[in-house]
Every structure is written in C-alpha cells, then in structure tokens.
Image 1 (cartoon, rainbow, N blue to C red):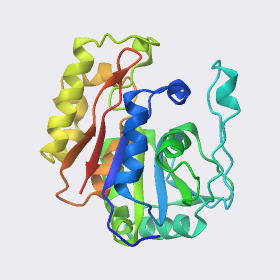
Image 2: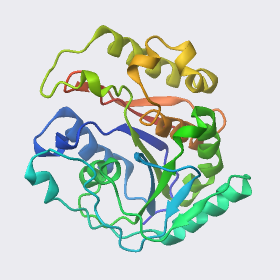
Image 3: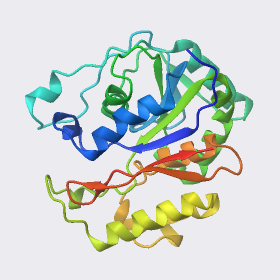
Image 4: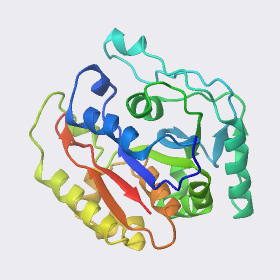
Amino acid sequence: MTDQKFPSVFVSHGAPTIVLEDSPALTFWRNLGKQLGRPRSVLCISAHWGTDAPMVSAAADPETIHDFYGFPEALYQLSYPAPGAPDLARHAAELLSNANLTCGVSPDRGLDHGTWIPLMMMFPDADVPVTQLSIQPALGPGAHLELGRALAPLREEGVLVLASGGAVHNLQSFRPGSTEVSDWAQRFDDWLVSTAEAGDADALVDYRNLSPDGAKAHPQDEHYLPLLVALGAGGEKAGGRVLHRGFMDGDLSMTALAFA
C-alpha cells in the first residue's frame, strides 16, 4: 500500500467484449496498472450507475454485476472478487457533505462492468479495495465537475480516483470489429483531447455548444460525465495528459486521460 499522490484517471471502457481478445486498449490497461503502482484503494465513477443524487457503495464484498445482454457466455463467467472499501465510501460521502453535496450510501451495490472490466486488467490480482460512486445524469456536466473537485483530497491519501465512461459513445455507430472511424467521431475526440490538455474546464462542461459534433458523439451525457469528475478531482487548474488513444468497433473511442 502507498500514500503516493495519484492523478485522477479517465478511461473509455468500450464494449464488454473487449476482455475476450487482445487489443491495444487491453495492453494499455495492463501497463497502466504497473505504471501507476498499487493504490491504497480505488474510487470508481462508472457511467453504468446512475442515481438522482450521489451514492457510494459500502459493500464489503461487492458482487460482479454482469449488466449487459446478448453477449458471449464467456463474459458471464467472469468475476472480479476485489474487496470493497466501505471506509473509503464513508469518507467520500463525508467530503461531498462538506462541500454541501448530499450523498447517500448503498449497503450492497456491486461492481458494474464499467468498473470491473478495466480493473481486471489494471489490477488482475483483485487485491485492491474498490468502491463505486454514482453519476447523476439529470444534474448535468457542471455538477459532476463540482463532484470531482470535492473528491480531490482523496488523491493525497493514496486513493486512485478512476472515472470510466467513453470519450465518444454513440451506440448507433457501434460496428463490432470495424476499424473505420467516422469523421465526426475523430473530430470530437481530437477536440476533447486538446481541450482537456489545455485544462479548459468551462469548455468541457459546455461541450454540447462548444465542441464539433458533441451531440452526435454523446446522444446522452452518461458516458461523458465521469470524465468531468476526473477533471475536477485533478484540482482547480488541472490539465489533461493523454494516456491512450484509439478507436474500437467503429466509433467507440478508447481515449484515456490523466488529470493533475
């Protein structure tokens, strides 16, 4: 265990089938775990847990949730038996409360695939305690930036704040196995990277008005919101650093960024 200061990290988790065969993204995740080192615990903000108000999970032994349908049976046999992090969950809730953000505690919420799929590659021994924090799609991007800023002190305590979503996420353009990337998807991904590198939080919050093809890249906000939590957790003047770029299955971006 360590009390080193980690960056906050945003990863695009792609389709669940990503774990069934090697890819540049899987290689990146495996190397990322080694490069970061072992955190004391992980707080994961996944696009796949949406609530009206922030919630954290106090599950001591979180189940592996297979929250997808119609995929190969091999996926449903996978599990990630990492211990929970109830103390971290309560501490995160306290930080949010101190920032005047209401936060509830779920006693038994497990780990959805936005969490366990990247963690399975990053920390394959499943020995790092992990808990999840929900997103609130109805509250919009700005609320998630503030959520992240309230959680920034965790980075001083050896906690990895891991946000998991998708830099470009339009399932109408999901084409399994395709290596062709649409111009609009590439334009948005390029804008996202350059804007994150510049640390332009205002533009990232107002992405639907200020980015090219933002509404097409994200018909709904859910897979974009975790990025703003990572940005906020990086600190008031955080800039983004590219960890990985690429596309899979057509227009699903696999871009990953660190914020500090």
